[in-house]
Length: 222
Image (cartoon, rainbow, N blue to C red; front, side, top):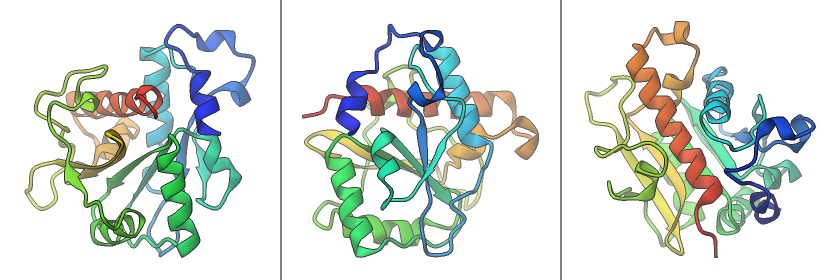
């Protein structure tokens, strides 16, 4: 279970002390139905994991793990990432599973890669029907836990000319869903030659990703 896994994590641990990749925590890439490209930004998560490994003492693997909501592997990852340009669809069973995952220590980062906003909002409303997405306040720990982001989430790419925004859902005051919108955060994690983004833009994106992961594995859980 996620709770047991999180008890193993410590900022004093060193990756070199672990015997193999099976002992390391990683990020789960969510494979979802509906036709959206859940596999988008293929180099992004491995680059974020490298940044986490080099900049913190959290023992992370080299590679992500692709998981579905109905897979037992879901419960092995404390951080779930989803992205895409298209439609997102969860079954009734998956809605219940994702709610249970989030209520029991899991964390979901959804990154709109331009095109999944409408369907994602519809599906997340099925999971927490009485709790709307709200903008994450600038004073929240997720913007300060490792790197400082006094102005909130960085913007990587332009689409509609709108500012980058971050929305969230909270369970018992713990942020369990972080939705990055008009930001293209995971585009900034990709290999430098994919989008040709300036170094400072990629660095800001990676720093925000590190903050998200550190928060996900260290935030207080009831």
